[in-house]
Length: 92
Picture 1 (cartoon, one colour):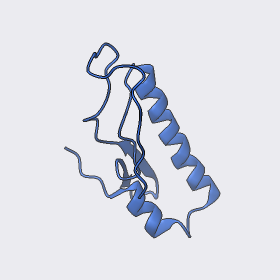
Picture 2 (cartoon, helix red, strand yellow):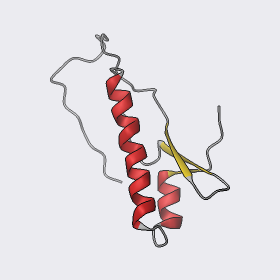
Picture 3 (cartoon, rainbow, N blue to C red):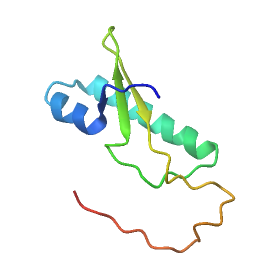
Picture 4 (spheres, helix red, strand yellow):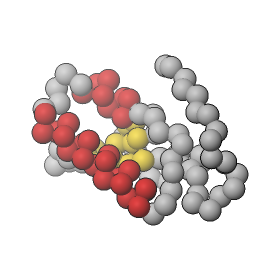
């Protein structure tokens, strides 16, 4: 498995006051593109958290987001989860 430099939580905690709007926008676009791709191939992530979004830093100053922890992904034809189940949210 590839090593990631930080989680989105760690990255935000240490860089929130210094990130420019364009840098923030680039990260959000990467994240939305990743979710769009995951949805397009028919997967449903059920464990989205800023601890499961990883960031790699590069020498040129760019950052690359990666989504991790597909352990709770729902496959399109899976019968393990039925429709109409309730979702509970845990506050941090």
